[in-house]
Amino acid sequence: MRLCALALCGLLFSGCALFSKDDGTEPVDLVEFEPTVELDSRWKTSVGNGTGGKVVKLSPSLQGGALYAASFNGEVIAVDTESGDRLWRRKTGDDISGGVGTGAELVLYGTGEGEVVALSRENGEELWRRQLTSEIISSPQTDGDRVAVQAIDGKLFAMNAQSGEILWQYENQPPVLTLRGTASPLMTGSAVVAAFANGKVMAFNPSNGLTLWERRVALPQGRSEIERMVDVDASPLLVGSTIYLASYQGNAMAVSASSGRPLWSQEASTHKDLAVEGGNLFLSQADSVVRALSTTSGQPRWENDQLLRRNINGPQVLGEYVAVGDYDGYLHLLNQSDGAFAARDRLDRGGISGGMVTDGSALYVQTDDGDLYALEVEPLD
Image 1: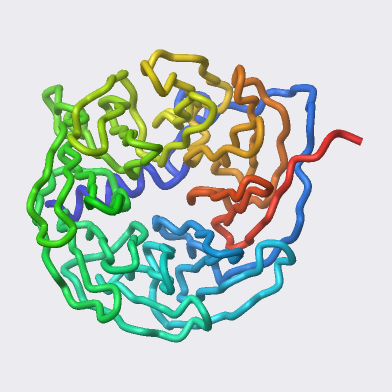
Image 2: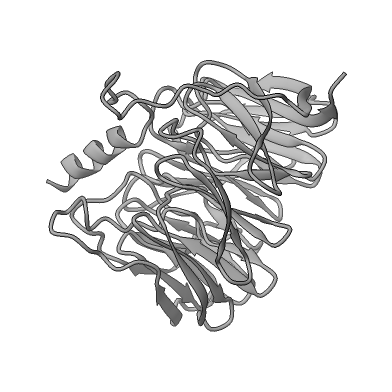
């Protein structure tokens, strides 16, 4: 029963395979607008077969002037962020379903067979692998001493970063029906913060796994199991001393990093990662409405509903703009100030579902077909 539920939800949120034309559930057509800037490609390369058509969570990671990325068919690469030159490539032979995470000297990913694998950041050599209890579909995280990862069965693991030895684990029984997704844990230095499919977020002592605090982001409501789904699949986001959280069919919320004390809460529904910049929290709603909320009060600043049902990914900030990609391979730039479209570029037809990263000067995007871009904002000619 549970496997069927997970598979069903994977289909429901893996793109637009289930929509019907002209019945109100199809993605909206793109509106025309007058661009104010353009997206320029600094470089482009590729990484394996991308997602391989699977519902997996693959996003690039930045560390020390290099970009690291992985494909479902087991290819992991390191690329120089300035030139796009490949620093190394490793063909692991794994079905990579969660990754990549980087930190200290490690590149980390999870597999469909439930393994966590650590590679050397220097050359891609495998350092260790550890078998866990179920599939990994989010990026493992590390603070240099420990690696934290959550499996799809709801279990959270902390491992020794040098050996992969399991130090402690926490088991959170998932509801009967969940989205096919898992948030990546947040490592703050003093806590491991993890989000769960029951609508809760918890902070643990990184040394021994004892609970420091817990906070409910959403309370299940409704009569059916679908109505009661409140997964927190958006990875907790730390900015200063505040952690930003968001759930499906629940709320967006800001809490104190030290105590979990709520600072504000605003009704929202998302299962994509968040972005913060300039006093705004940006989120992609489950229906693909892009919203900006005040980071101090949670009050709405603006929303853009012109990408409705286009299955956009989580937002990322680049300069004065907010970027989102959609199921049809378009990358959209919106003004931070009011949410109006500023630029649009089609990267490919395979879609953009993974998270995007930025170093402030460029936006790094991995398409579902495995193309990897470094994009910059340029004035119109």
